[in-house]
Image (cartoon, rainbow, N blue to C red; front, side):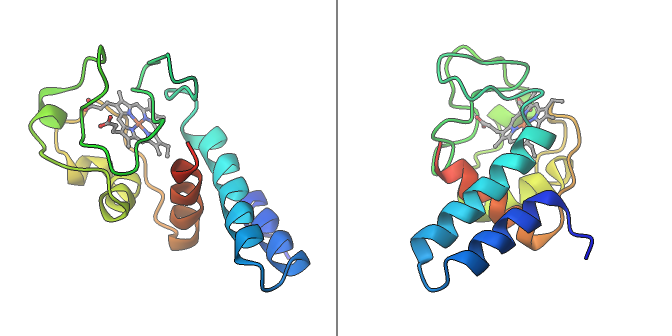
Length: 126
Ligand code: HEC
């Protein structure tokens, strides 16, 4: 078997703790943390008081786009009218430039549905 690390973590948690959806959620979030470290931390800090190159993502689930104070969002993001629900986050991480043409965020393309699930469950814990 040659699975990427986040899948392995989620898989082993799922195998070790059958039927406890709480543990499964934690496994998903742990896998998501790995993905986040790999793809997102370069620009997004997990410290609430800090905007890095990208805005803080603490509490991002459910919040309107471009709503972090003191972060210089692109005009495109400010005008997007989006709210970060699960659906929009999925679109954003699979092809952010398609969702918000003209965004300042470098292109990311996480198209694997399971990886998207892991990342979103991690973002939910922030
Ligand atoms: C190269 C730097 C960079 C990387 C890597 C990056 N981002 Fe971003 N991100 C940004 C910038 C810059 C913005 C602001 C975009 C704008 O204003 O157009 C942003 C905005 C966002 C927003 C909108 C936040 C808001 O307050 O409206 C979300 C959600 C987001 N990023 C998630 C992610 C996730 C998840 C990853 C990893 C898969 C990621 N980003 C990787 C730089 C980055």
